[in-house]
View 1 (cartoon, rainbow, N blue to C red):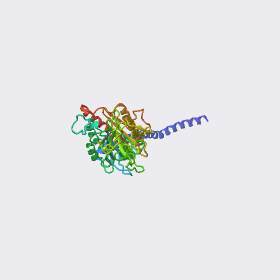
View 2 (cartoon, rainbow, N blue to C red):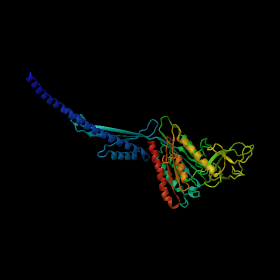
View 3 (cartoon, rainbow, N blue to C red):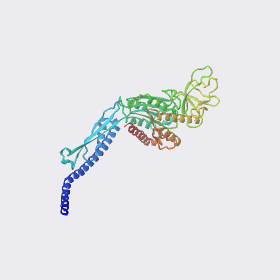
Length: 460
């Protein structure tokens, strides 16, 4: 019996060797397969990163044309992939709403190590595709053309003496809008400007580059700073109303289809603190009918309040004098209420009461109405508005800088930043006078181009 058990043990030892001989190739094949799969995975990751980068680069440079944009995208693909990159395919389809898309596809062939012993798997293709959809841009540019932009002169074209930003503005805006899709199915952009009054200089539309370039070149700088919005009441006019509300009306006039990718933007430029508001005030006394649309304010210091024709930046009807009131037309007629009393107060949205005319009260009201308009823009549904602001010159004090940052909802100004609302950016340029003009031009252009980059990133 013992001898039989010993033979059995010897027999088992022989079987283990046989089993190991059979299993070892399978184990080696599995280890090799794991190595090859790891290489395939690493190639796939590198390929995915490369097509993503190429897709975004191509989309961001579409304003240069599809050929140039595709070449730049391919260059970024090659840089990300490294040695021996495959040739990516860059195409330009459109989505169901006609929005421009960029699609980048690439295939790399991986030469395997262990799987090559199976001829079918000697070379394994790995592919990756990235698609970026460019949203439609609906944007209004709001520009300050008040007299301080040129040191009180009406034109900046004759030279740099006394120039406080007009030349720099006229140079920067055309370069800014060149970043966007000017085609008949692309972006839509409007331009408004303001001084003692506000106007829509180019109604929002496609093919905006030439007309906006012409409009900004023709700006004449004179008057006060009617830079506010209508606040929490409807605008009195969609043609000469408060500029932020004009921009709101322009952007809102573009229909948005269900599921369409749209980005709304307002870019607001000024060289000072807004100091003028607009109201319809009954002025014709006993027996009169209707109200008169009046812009009033116009001064940064002191107590004087001027009254302006909202259709003409250079028409100043006169100023308010305590006890004698203010003129409301070119004939010098004094504003009187329905009872024949001289009008001495304006309707304040901030207090909800009638407030006596003064420079400080009107300026405070202008700021309040602008903030309320900005909040309404940022909380609009289904598409909110991103607001970017630029302040230029010594007229933009520290307090005014904080106010412009509040309009933009700039996150770096934590005291006024509202989390959950679209965040924009505020840019401050200290001086544009005399010898500082060259630097100012560069700084202003940088500010506009930074905004363009932010907008294009949101579009992609």
